[in-house]
Image (cartoon, rainbow, N blue to C red):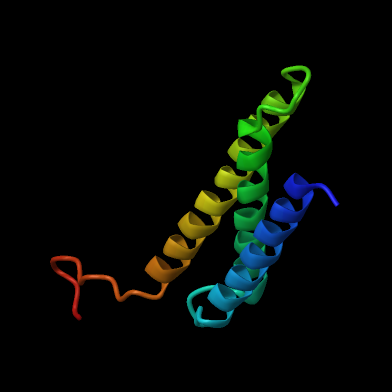
Length: 103
């Protein structure tokens, strides 16, 4: 087997286990299980996209361009997931009493 393939496979497997371990530790009250799984998958995709974008083995620039697009898309998904979670948590906070209103 190719050494590059084996190292890429090892990174993929390690990132999969790390992602699953992170999902298990997230409280369901803070994150829906689906959102947690989506963020973990995006984290795995970022690792692969960085490897593709930074690889010097491409005969053309198409691999670098596609890798950069994949990094951008995965990061957008992860950041959006955390912004949605933050917005959900703000919905459960008590609002301060407005002047003139009874608390």
